[in-house]
Image (cartoon, rainbow, N blue to C red; front, top):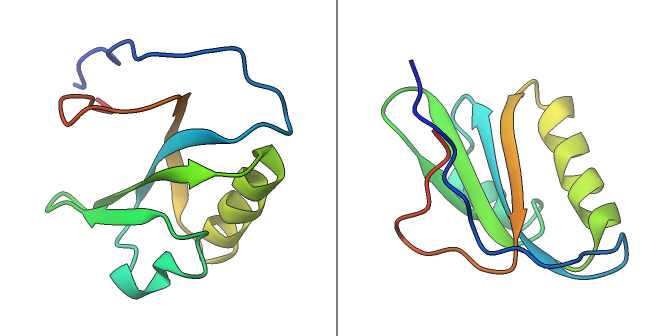
Length: 92
C-alpha cells in the first residue's frame, strides 16, 4: 500500500503558464526518450515504474507529453504540478 502524497509548494497556474511537473507511469521509460518527452528528467525504479520530472512551458506541452506516453502503452499512475520540487518530494 502506498503512503500519502506529500504536499508541495504550489501557486496559481493558468493553462498558458510554465510549471514543474512530476509524472509517474507504469513501465520503463528509456532515458533516451527525454528529448521527445519535452526534456523531462527520467528515473526508472526497480519496481517497473518510471518518474519524469521537469519544467514545461504550458499545459498543452503536458498534454502532448502525456499523449506520447499513452501512445507507447505506458499507464499513467500520477501527475503532480508545482513550482519546484525538493529531493524529498515523493509520489507515493
